[in-house]
Each structure stands twice: as C-alpha cells, then as structure tokens.
Length: 178
Image (cartoon, helix red, strand yellow):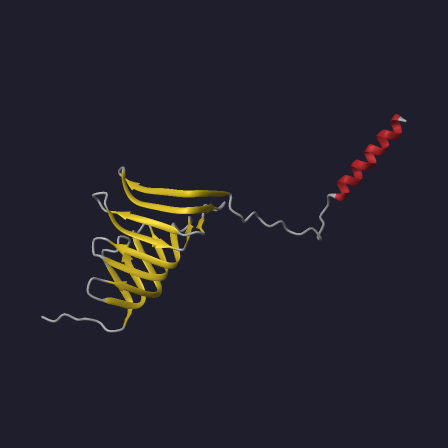
C-alpha cells in the first residue's frame, strides 16, 4: 500500500511538471494600472532654502506606480514671491502630474490670477513646468488687465504671471505711440 502511494505521488509530480510547459493559449497579464494610493485633501509644498515657493492643493489625489498623479476633482496652486507673499494662483477643474517629465497639466476652466499685476488669464488647458518656473499653452487664451481684454492662441509666461507672451494675438490691440 505504501508503494502504491509513492507511485501515485511520483506520477502526479511528473504530470504536474509536463502541465507547466509553454501554453500559447494563456493570455498575457496586464500590469496593474489603477492608483496605488488615494489621498484626500492633499497639500504639497515646494521650497528652496526653507522658503515656500509653491503650494499645490487638491481635494483628491490619485498616485500611480509610475509616480504620476491625477487630481480628478481639480487642483489649486499658489505661487509665492521672495517675501513669502502669494504672487499668483492657478486653479483648474482637473489636473495631472507626469513625474518623468516633472510636468503639471491643468484642464477645464483654467484660471491664473496675478496679484502683482492685477491680471487674470483664462484658458481650457495649461502646462506648468516647475523646473523652468514657466506656464504655457497652445489653446485659446483670454487675459483681463486693468484697461483691456487680450485674446489669442497660445501663451508662454513665468509661473507667477509677471510676464507673458501671447503667441498668436487676435482682436483689437492698443498701441501706444510716442
């Protein structure tokens, strides 16, 4: 009886080894592409020499294995000057951060307010590069200044919105002459 049990185990092992061979019918397993981490009421501070330069807030942040983050309920960013005062803000209905490129993308009713110049930018999509301290878009832009409304397509600007350039201005423009 003991020999019969040993033979049965041996045959079972042989069958198991042959059953583990290449099987072309087995589908490839897709990597996990859902968030690894979900954070509520997230706040991230960017600082230099112990001084806060940027504050990023979101009601909800989803972080992925790649290090990328999604802000499905919107994103709000405050940019600070050298005196630790808010120089400008950025808010949008949706945001995405790509870690590999260190690039933020703001989408949907994007608004940038410059407190130094009392100007406001509106667009539907805007990119922010923290390393270059720059924001830009190739979409339609509307800028309200104290005296006029500027329209155009595409924009490059400093992240504090203290200086900017509309790439393709449209509409009526005011020109001062000496």
